[in-house]
Length: 122
Image (cartoon, rainbow, N blue to C red; front, top):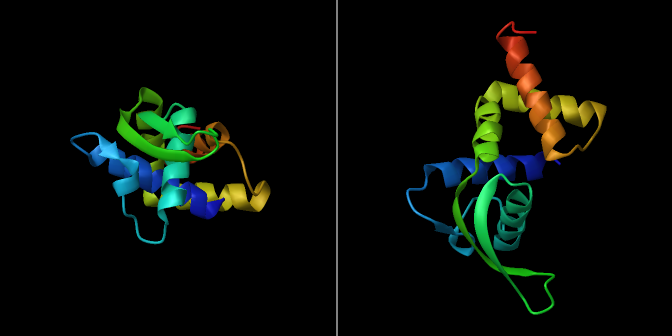
């Protein structure tokens, strides 16, 4: 879970910083292979965090490519909650110690809760 979440955060930051659409198979991120990157781009698209056009092999199981256009509103919201390194680390530690794995929506709720706590808003 920890490694997957770090990849998701890195992808969102990369997509946000792009000034043009990105071909996912051309993304090179240290520590991650191309298949993992492409798979997580598909997951981000399915979670409505990004807008992307995805092409699949004939059997529809394996994505061949993904053209990432931009973050969605939800993607910006998630990234805004995830941007602070200490909030990010605390959220990962909290989830790993209590549940091991959670959905993106639950993880985002944890991020927001921790950020609010640090701002004395809770």
